[in-house]
Image 1 (cartoon, rainbow, N blue to C red):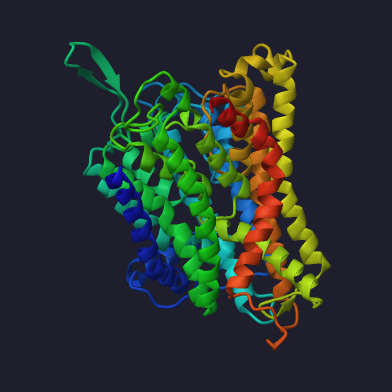
Image 2: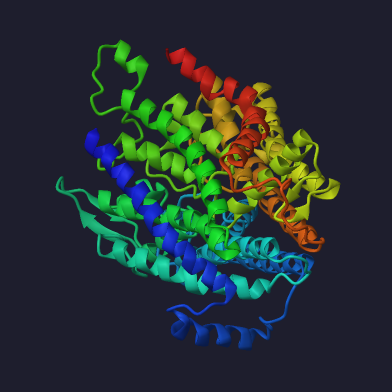
Length: 573
């Protein structure tokens, strides 16, 4: 056990240590400063802008940023949808996998465009290699979009009074070429040398020691898995995701993949400090996020190590902890740590089955996505936290009887209304979707086109756990996470379409809101700091932000958690 905990602590601390210089590099990239990779990527970027006819030097306001962002995402969605519904007749399909149904293609295309990678299919049988490669492309660009949006907010926070907030395409391309591509290539090479396949050949036929002949799926997996984690996407090349021995062969690859999904979210917070030249502010933000993260991780690891009380009552020893749904080569500690890292960061990849986690672990996994503000995905993690900063500044200003100010700009009614709407939207999407699904299941509704049979047919577990499965699916969709309690039968029109709608709203409205707030504040008159200015780089302010997150985000979901994983936890006691 001590060795397992040491492994978790080592990966976590090493990531923090490396994230600080990497954050400095990211800040240089977005400022346009000279970096060591200029000689490699300058010609590539000039070529991309030349053939696309885009002027990357043209300054944009926040509305132009938003228009460009939404336009390119719409194009990618349309392309992906048609590739998936026709993939059975397209090249690079050596295993002869069929085309997707329209509702599944709708869900999958949206899911990968919005950086969620919610998968209602199994990779080995659900996609051709062409489909996998286009989804890999989306894993690059969806992460790049989130980072470009964060860079625009960085710029808005830095400038005193301006409408010019950089160029979306410049931020986007640099995010893909100078940050995502080198890191994902590095991870992919390490995976190849440790047993992950990278080939365009079809299934391999092998004979087992028992003399049975089996087919083993393979493909260009290593490249896919590299960007899946670096871009905080999480989509599995194989159905079992990173619990699959070819996606994640050893404890070493497990540590690499865990580091890969942590490094950019960590580094983006430090990049904020370097970009604004307010490193103390970034340390406060990182401190708040880390405290929240640890408060979720520690109960999860403890729960998994202690095992299942119901099994203990039968007199069965559980010296290795709760091993149902875990890989023996990893163990419960790093599996529990991964389950919180992947839900906090919105990666959504899994190295164990979350549906088999202990109830307290399931509650922490759900709460990670419900809060959706600790570290977060590439770029969008900061955007979510930015909303809570605006609310904290506003509430703090009211408490001391002063006009709220943030970095020299007055926070007024318009900005607060936008922030409040975005904060309320997240629980609305989750709880409304879960309520609809629960109503149908509770009444055993005949679903017709929406589901082949009555609604109880999509539940493989009754009572509290069945409710948790439905709650998890909508929570994962709204948080752009993609992991699931996979006891749920979700590949049907009801779940494909409802979660597809939640995916769209849960991705783009929380991007639109922070962009609008940042743009509005950037256009306001700068107010120099005075003795009465609320300082945002202090421990007091960090505590205030944490309190706002706890009150607005966490408590909104307590009744739902009480009906699901918490009720299940007490039934086992």
